[in-house]
Length: 360
Ligand code: ADP
Image 1: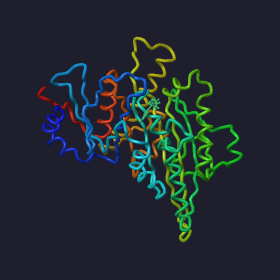
Image 2: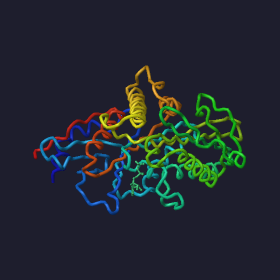
Image 3: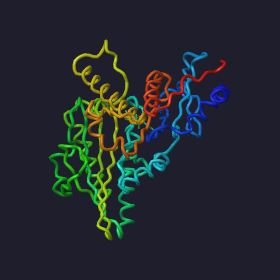
Image 4: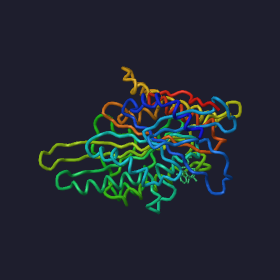
């Protein structure tokens, strides 16, 4: 088959990129064709167990129609939420050991970012995305460790829209019920000007996140429209006290559902839509620049170039661990967005693979 040719020809390249540089992990997730969607051609030619992905442009078959990409892991359309979480869990657990972790989903609108991060249906546990599973896991582990370390957990939830940070959990009754977590967070770990809520159980988290999702909808003419054009950031702060030594450790987890990465046709967008597009563009490229600078061990990391990178600063770089989900829509119509998403991934992971040549 075609992809065997591609694989053979790129064997050398593969060996060279076994280990992605930097401390960012990059997972690719391909969503299935949706029910009712006519089964068109897919752009996904091959998904390998060791993280390789070959994308083809079936509408333009030819010599240069194939490209090879390499990830730490590729999840195909049949991967379950649980499988995806199993590979995310070690990172989540390191938060309890005092690490700062940032997990974000990148991709065009409709590629499954919210599916991966939040899940399609919060009331069914099997459907839970990374966010709920992460919090659930943190509570379970902290419960197991409670004889030696006492943990406290605080949550913030904001939306970044047009370079403005909006608190999604302000002015609500949960502050009265759950209490405000006012432990000062040093090193700029807390998102400034956003309320911080004490949470003690997964139920508390579910309640808060529902409020956050409802607040996100307020003022938006159409929820889907608006939410695809803003970044949503759920921040979890953990403070643990060793009961023997009294030592305090702090960790944080940022869970980010990014705005859709699709390019907007400049000739068509005007007014508000154009402004939104420019802000999204600016913040996503700022994010790319920061991660690229970190991967290159550059002396200057340009955190100040966007609100998004300012908010995430504490969990990007230094000892922090980063995981990016690169979300893809398999549809041939999405080919050019798919390639641009993959190029972003290639850049931030510090690895360039170039075209995968075939003899076809
Ligand atoms: P985005 O957040 O990138 O705009 P969504 O998460 O809303 O995309 O996904 C678009 C649609 O595809 C939704 O109907 C969602 O339920 C569905 N979907 C996405 N990923 C998957 C998946 N892995 N399995 C099944 N359906 C999915």
